[in-house]
Image (cartoon, rainbow, N blue to C red; front, side, top):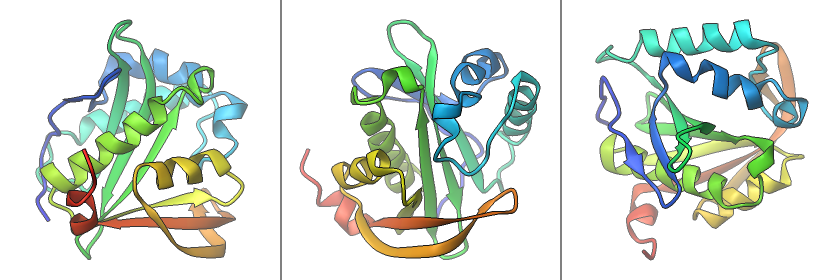
Length: 186
């Protein structure tokens, strides 16, 4: 699998997916600290200071040619406001773990699907992953539907998966191979 020091921006019909930048902290904090947003995510940021520190860490590694984690902002094309985010984590087996988040005010409007499809494109086309996968909290029905909508298939369920910060949750794993991605209809 290829590694990149920076990910080129990509455009979807309504969004620009690009590397996180320091000024994004304010927009990200507007949704990342909401309890509705945090309900089904692993890493919870409690306030603006934690969001700023998270962004600082992501920006600090962007030029590292050996980086394994790519965190992207989803900027709404018309307003230029950051309304969502996505991440890709490179694993030893040439797979990429992916995940996405979206401002709760924009749920059920197709933006999450755009982020998910954009992440698949970056992972398979730019980073040349052989497989991509995501873990979704079992109670998060909307994200499970989104994973299926973008072409991923349920592969297994873990009843007690370590999701971070000392927490264990039931999760569903969804996967897609590069062959499956390149066979998707346009």
